[in-house]
Image 1 (cartoon, helix red, strand yellow):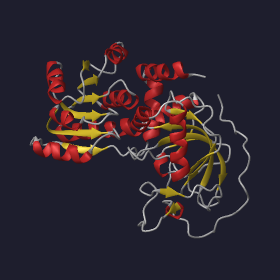
Image 2 (image 1 turned 90 degrees about the vertical axis):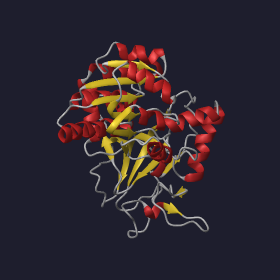
Image 3 (image 1 turned 180 degrees about the horizontal axis):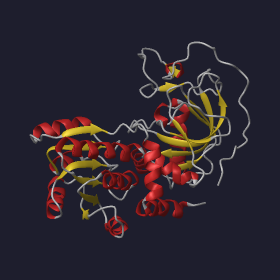
Image 4 (image 1 turned 135 degrees about the vertical axis):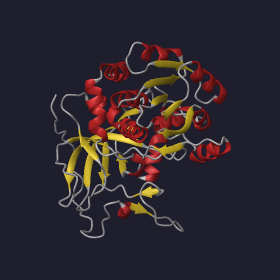
Length: 369
């Protein structure tokens, strides 16, 4: 498979000012009456016009990928055409895809259409790319009404355009992987990269390999986190999953040494299940896309250990106050989705670990069109 340029109609030839652009996208923020200046992610509305500033890149959209927490919330509130319309309304009103409940967005696949002469991203027209910054801060306009989306999948076939800023991040899709497979991996590539760093730091600091526990171990970020922890030298890997079908997915792989069936929202139930298996962990990774896992994750982490929260459903105030209330000496990290080299590391795990690849391809196959 080779990268291919997808021909799309060019945008109107209007040209924005040559000055005044911010590499952080501040020039795209539209402020309403009484609103204070904000960065694009925190702004209520963005300017989604197709004309680019000198350091911007315009991308023709092919596929949107909603993050898990956002899709779960929307799917729980809408169905069928109402779900499609809800996404269209969000993008139309905000000029970006930012779920007003979860605050999160996702990412996209597209083909570079135009590159500003001052863009530092190194992209060229015709490059097929995955954006590695959230849709919650990416100017976006949808032009096809999402007519090909049935709402049954967080991956949305779409037409339209998106704008990348000077400080945005995008990766050219590899030729050796199905684009949607690469999209699934890149959507969560921040998780394995940070887990790799945390495991190596623990080994360097303590001189011992850590026990690692992953809540949501059969999911995309969870399975990659397990693989990253294994490769980084973890001593023992425990995966927690909520249902037997997910336990069965992991039981035939080398990703986890123990697979625990438990509700990650149930503090005592989770603690009992983990203690029955291998016991609390030095590093706990939360990859569950539902709220309520903050206190349970603290209980299953040893004093002096680290908890990494990758779920956008996490209440960070609940996590901080929970640790205080439980007198737990744990370090809590917010997985911000970016670690240098994160896309390359995640794609390498997919290529080199048969268990990871099988899980990801299994997710793709039932949804192939």
